[in-house]
Image (cartoon, rainbow, N blue to C red; front, side, top):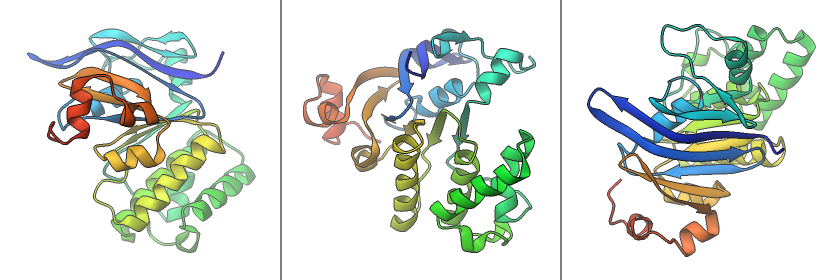
Length: 250
């Protein structure tokens, strides 16, 4: 069976507000799946649920077909949840840089996992080189520019070699050079390393550039999901056509 991370019929409420209603979505290893939608459509909430950071009120998260019961806030991770979390990583819209050097930041996850020192050095060196951060390896991470810090956040996730990488508006407000570096790294993660990438973005052009499959969320519901060419060139739902025409505000 092809490795997959799937959300099935996910519903999420915050008090009286329903953020997601019956949403189903799948990421397969080796593909980039972009999720588009207006602000407030539930994109980030879906990403957090699939990353097991939040529990849905209804529905299921499955990894390779096996149901993963997402822990509630006060519940500890059991063996299955912990093993599932080790197979995925998330890059948030706003990067976090710890009070360490660039190379120490990038190595942190591998150190926590107890990987051998030689392996850590090899992996971190390769990823920093790929992301254009090798020359800054010994610089304090918090002195980097915003774009460099976001590249470092991506490096810290990518170096883990997880099966699924979840990206939340990971190039928002960055200059074209940093956008290009990060998009190329995301494509390489899927194409060369065989990872599955779920990309939440409001940028139609980014979805066209990097995605294999595209889905549209609107008002917490999945409107349409299709291979990229079909989604952009022959959308079936009138709401998708409206969104692509700019009639559904971002």
